[in-house]
Length: 140
Ligand SMILES: [Zn+2]
Image (cartoon, rainbow, N blue to C red; front, side):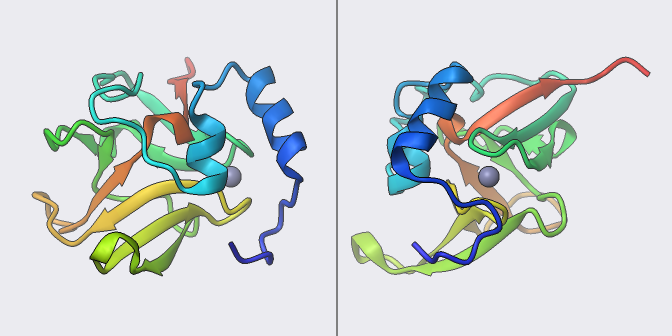
């Protein structure tokens, strides 16, 4: 973990914040220690409502719901992120070269982005449901 994110908190502080938000039980391990939730286990994998997805830790908006698509992989998938919301980090763990995605504000681990998306962006943001907080569309 680099330490130059605008939002810095200790592990106990993050645990308290996640508990207060009613985050999924694995949210702390996923966001602060780059764990991966089991596929098809996340609460947002099958959510298609209008709205936006935010960082479960700091609340920064990461994705619009209309960029979410069904990748069939068992994790919430998006084809485009909110500009500047996500930082990409080269990840060579587990014997693969992948691109890790973290929240640009607080460094929360979100998942990975792959260059094999089916839409015109060519990108597939494969996210942990536990890293996300869905905000339903607000009525205008
Ligand atoms: Zn964040």
